[in-house]
Image (cartoon, rainbow, N blue to C red; front, side, top):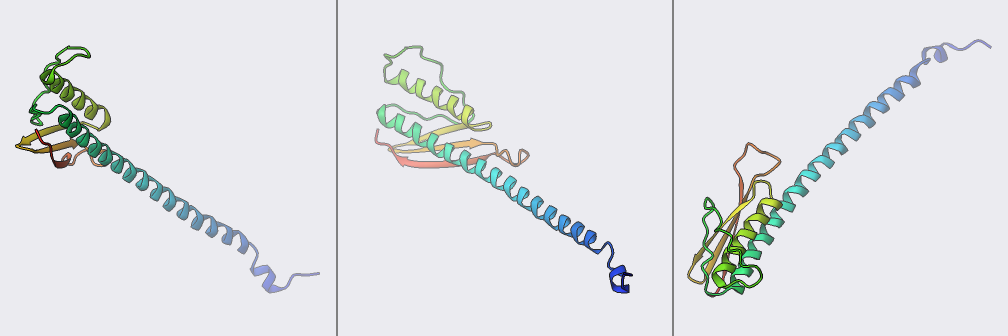
Length: 151
């Protein structure tokens, strides 16, 4: 039985439909992959901010536990020298040990992480600085937390 004219002109039409469908699905998959990458970057940034907040409150709690000691430390200053007192440290040696440990934790937890502590009477301001991995050329990010620490 010979084919009609309309059947002959539609030959290969389904192949074009399949190619267009593959193109549309490919664009959709690329869009989802892009959203997943952006989500991962934002999650990493949020994790760094959370770590910075936890570190700021950590040094505040250490200062509260070691009353009478001035924990002030500028961001460009090196931490104090290691008192090497073992487990039986006095208040001044404990302050040094706390600042050394705190700076080491910042450096380990945050990219280029460092921090400063400013004590002004009963108020303590802790600033944590780190480099955002999403844009390494940008200025470092900073987070400052102020709280009352009765000394």
